Image 1: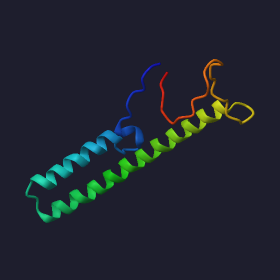
Image 2: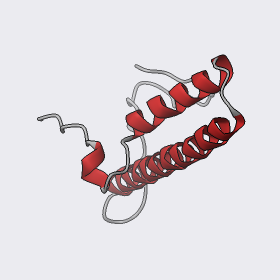
Image 3: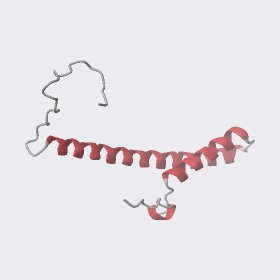
Image 4: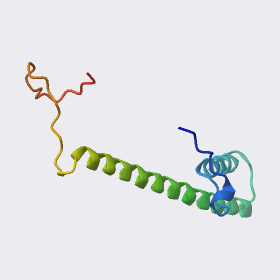
Length: 105
């Protein structure tokens, strides 16, 4: 399957990608912590950081919704047409395992 090209800032009406917004936030935090900035510039940086944080949260919320949708679709596919979950197949010679251990095989 071909990989999708990362979205550039121009793809979203000038909004930065998540990675760009996060890098910008990191740069602002570092500048605010390590540099002696005048108050007006600190306030400007805070305002920019607030907008970048809003963008990051928006992208994360959208990703979270997509993951939930994918999970719900997968669960619906597993349930089959009758809407009931298929019981896990257990070999006839093994009794069902009733303990709460997680097993990979």
